Length: 118
Image (cartoon, rainbow, N blue to C red; front, side, top):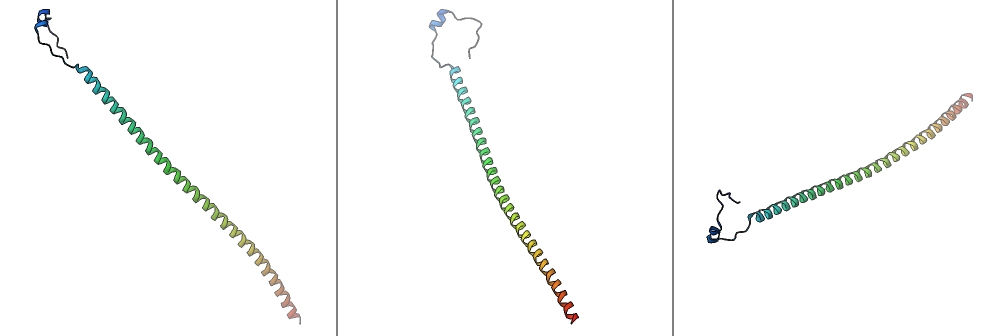
């Protein structure tokens, strides 16, 4: 940083004074600033990648859950159809057996009347 002087040095003073070369600090500061910005950008990219990976894991888990639910739904539908078919078969069998019982009762009534008539 340059200090302001109230009196400008004369040429004679400048020639007699001892001069040393110094690196400009603004370049060093600029390099640190660029380095810091690159670190921040790298950290932001890392966080973005980390969030993207977490989102991908969550999406994969949801996909697996969805597939498991579809499989369970298919099995449930199959069992429901199986139960419905069994129920229909039992109802047909009950109807057949009821008709057979009805015929047998009619035959029994007929034979009882024949027995009374003798």
